[in-house]
Image 1 (tube, rainbow, N blue to C red):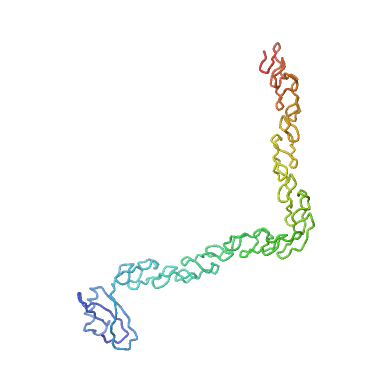
Image 2: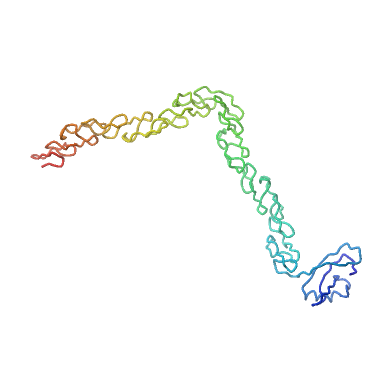
Amino acid sequence: MVNVLGPYIFLLAAASHGQSRRALVLAAQAAVANTVMDQIMPVIKSLGYVMTAVIEDITDTHVENIDVSLYSAECSKGLFGKECSKTCSDHCAGGRHLCHHVTGTCDLGCDPGYQGNLCSQECNDKTWGQNCSQNCDAKCKKNSCNHVTGECYGCVDGYRGRDCNSECHKGFYGEGCNKTCSEHCGGDLNSCHHVNGSCNQGCDPGYTGSLCIQECAKGHYGYTKDKCDQKCTKGHFGKECSKTCSDHCAGGRHLCHHVTGTCDLGCDPGYQGNLCSQECNDKTWGQNCSQKCDAKCKKNSCNHVTGECYGCVDGYRGRDCNIECHKGFYGEGCNKTCSEHCGGNLNSCHHVNGSCNQGCDPGYTGSLCSQACDLGSYGLTEERNA
């Protein structure tokens, strides 16, 4: 029991080595428990143990049964508490070695993203940074962001980037900016709102609705997002019905889409493309340009509608160039005549190059049997001239 005149700061220490008796010492004041300050201080220094406590607002003049513990005055860096058994927080500003040896409080405060006396608590999910003093951006999804960097955990619809402060790229909208503006937005493909996808300049002819994905009733078109009020006559399409359906629509030019002009039944043979305005290339022909010109067509080229060859390779004739030259003729257009000196008969020459199939008449040589043998010589074949 000690007489006190509070509030005072008290120090507790063993009176000497090996003694279990404890003395409550009144700092810088009169004697307590028959021990004075100049007697106890050397003991404190030699033992290295000290405990401070603040006793305030005591009205009674007696203090009994004060429970205290002995703490090391100098823990190693990075440790604190009773017997230095606790580790300073990893999130102390400047490093884990910079904390109070008794309380563990970080000397320089907390690293960004942490709070509390021991810097062990992360900022809540709507704040971040030094002392958790920064608010997550309003465009962060659910106002939630990384407690250290402030980077958003996802963005509200229509925004992107680390802080969600950038609008979606043109042509995209919505959550994660992963939705594509309608291809029927008026003006250009990129003209839709970055949040909800509504077309900024209305719809292309023939479409309606905020997203311009609803098709007007057949025979109508609309240029704004709330109107589909004009009928096109058969054979016309597009804005103000000013365009004419293709002459090459299968079934007739009146059978095309009122908005796009696409032929309802596809294209006539020999034509291709959305509007059936493109001829097949010069090596294909027919329905959907699915037929290939015959290999015996000159340069593999034929009429895009009928498949008729534009000339034949040497030795062939006919519409599709599938017929060999008539006997007695050969070469390009089958307009060359076999040599009259071909052995056997006049018609026995090759339809492509004119070479005589049965050799030459006596006295003639060469692949075409058109060369006379030397005077006094003759040959039955092109190899003999003796």
